[in-house]
Length: 234
Image (tube, helix red, strand yellow):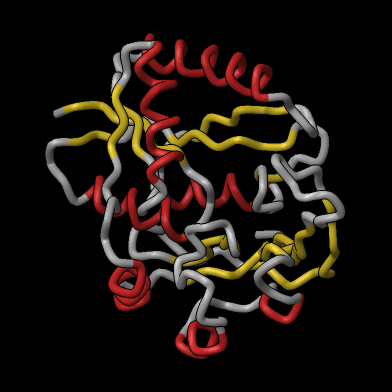
């Protein structure tokens, strides 16, 4: 049995990738690893509070490692912090790292190149599964996820704060991948067949944020709508 690190985003794709790993007797998953904004204590990009992230790990029964990043890390800062974290992982006898990527070739190549530098290998349980098939499998198995962030370039504020279901999928514009693989939207899984119990929460406010965009056309806006999920005291 090989030990494998699960890169956990808190969303549906990493949750389904983990599900597949846990069904495979060839793998043991000793840790989850999640990048978080150190200042705001939220999951990077997704904007989910770290308390909810920790509740996911508790329900999975898998220890959580948090890669704490400054608010706007440079690629050099990110790579340095990630390398230090992965060195710790290797010390635990782990030389495999799993991701929930589906079809973005450049992203996979980047991950594999970074892992190769420290003699680790990437595993991609969802790779090249058609997005429509993938989302149907995820919903059929009982995964439930809230849309917590949408890229304003693709979707309006009305899409954030909704649960991924048939109605949500039917409302998506045709140019949006149903799994959001191009960054159109991000999710938070609050119930899953691999959770010991659902995670309670209430919907908070929706906010709009803009960030510098790499290779942006002059005047192009890089905005995102976020829906805050409020933990319920257990």
